[in-house]
Image 1: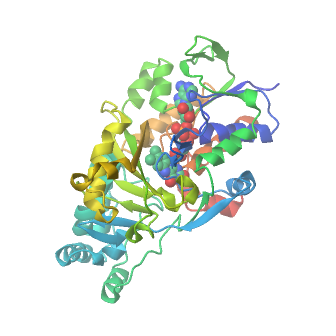
Image 2 (image 1 turned 120 degrees about the horizontal axis):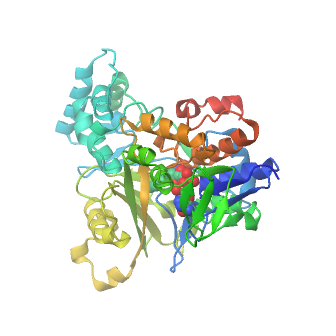
Image 3 (image 1 turned 135 degrees about the vertical axis):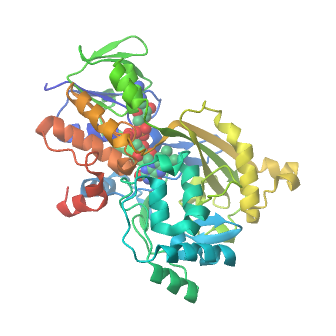
Length: 472
Ligand SMILES: Cc1cc2nc3c(=O)[nH]c(=O)nc-3n(C[C@H](O)[C@H](O)[C@H](O)COP(=O)(O)OP(=O)(O)OC[C@H]3O[C@@H](n4cnc5c(N)ncnc54)[C@H](O)[C@@H]3O)c2cc1C
């Protein structure tokens, strides 16, 4: 039978572990999932009006040959290939992303502040920043920092960038070439050629969650127990207690529950004290379905960053553009808006953001004709709302995060516990769907073969494409 492996969570990480164990012929495992569905944060939902929603936009950008191969055979009706066209909505203007190469779209005095800040930086070598805020000012200068980078990041993370580290960025934030900025300004051209996700795949039907449903379908049904929540972990006796009081023994545990909750579950004061210092944000997703086609102004945009205080959300995604199957009819359009709140705040009802979201949309996107004051009852009836929230949305890379996470994860490993995935390893830079799935795969490989886990330990290597080259 081999070791008894218990997996907490049927999100991408838990499913990755199970998929790999099946592939390796290791049958002695089980997944416990508290929800009634698989996919975790990467699940999709079809609501009563036949709209399909992701939990905010989920773009798959695989860094792994292993995952590329799997994705190809999973969905019979396949994927669309979309070109990323992200934009920033600021001061009533549209600025293509990356902001730093395209701020020439903004009013002249702001343009001058942004360019002046960059010029002031000069060619002097960048010093190593001690936090994210310093890094932003060092890389982009005052204008870009004050108008975009600082407000956007504060809104997105619900954390002041001065509390965040500067070592997690890798390929995620493009740095600036001053000559290129000047050339763009002089010629008035949009410069959008940057970084990962330029072209991305999206399931033709059923949203992102369809991928994880398909992976789950390849796992024997008796190996996934839905509506089963783990509430206690005893590290000494290697036992887990479920909310219904039943007990499950394990030799090895792979957990994708948030690391701080896992430490509380095992009642180890030292571990809890450490992980209680980890920061996270709540994410609220307000979705809007409209019985009209998408206005031309928004029809060429995959998602739009909204850094300013004039809307509660930090990003809006016209989700109907990803697939016409996301709306009840192709003549309709749909949008998802993400709002972030600090993890220490009390959780609110998801729909409490709908009104603020609507007024933010009316203000930022008059082309949608949603101005609340003017909308008649008839118009209101044509607006369909759907709301979702996640207590754990973003794991914040604070300055002390790595020291805490590495010590706790190594301690747990000594007890046969692999805490992995977006919140299990608490590494945002290794916390996308592909990373989380592969953290599960790599944990399974480590358990069976003793091979090194790369993703959570060395996210930089993964994000720089090294694993693709190695053909993992
Ligand atoms: C707003 C937002 C946008 C995102 N956009 C993208 C994107 O564009 N591209 C991308 O690649 N990724 C994106 N992600 C990240 C993606 O959602 C995660 O990478 C992925 O879902 C993490 O997988 P996981 O298995 O580690 O965790 P989760 O998805 O959180 O799954 C964990 C599972 O464990 C279960 N669980 C937890 N505790 C217990 C317990 N005690 N007992 C039983 N079950 C338990 C949960 O119910 C859940 O199903 C986004 C995330 C958010 C929040």
